Image 1 (cartoon, helix red, strand yellow):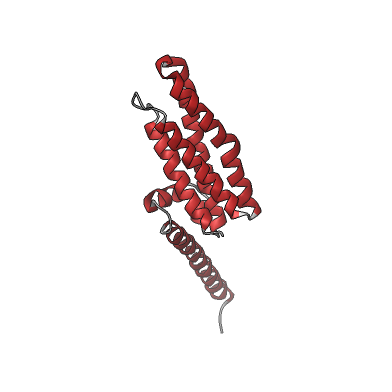
Image 2: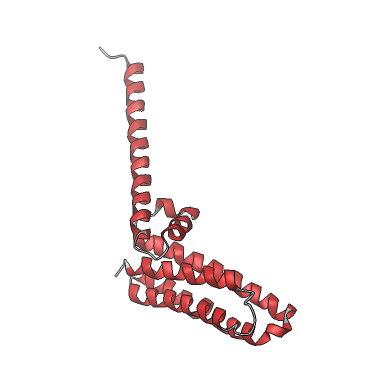
Length: 176
C-alpha cells in the first residue's frame, strides 16, 4: 500500500519531469526553427545571432515571428543610421550633398519600406513584406554609393542595414 506522502512525491516528480521535457522540447523546436530558417538566408550567422539576441527568437513558434524580429532589427539599425547622418549633417558640411541623399533614402526606409514589411508580414501578405526589405537594402546601398568623391562615414551602418534587410527578405520569402 502506497503512503500519501510517497504518492504526492511521485506525482510531483512526474509533473516536474513532464514540464522540463516539454520546455526543452519547445526550446529545441525554436532552435531548430531558427537554424532551418537561417540556412535559407544569405548570412546564416547574422540571422542566427539577430534572432537569438531577441527574447522572442528562442520562443518563436513560426517563421512569421522570426520575420517580425528581423524587421524590428532592421528598423533599429536604420534608426541609428538616420540619427548618425543627421548628426553628420550638422558637423560635416563638406558632406552635405551625399548626406542629404542618404537622409532621403533613410526617410523612405523608415516611413515606407519598413512599415510596408511590418504590415505585410503581420497581415499575411509576404510578397509585400519581401519588397519592403529589398527596398530597405537598396536604400542603404544607394546611400553608400552616393559617396563617390569621399569615403562614406556611414559604411558600417549602411552595410548593417543592407545585410540585415537581405536576411529579412529571405526569411519573409519563406512565408510565401
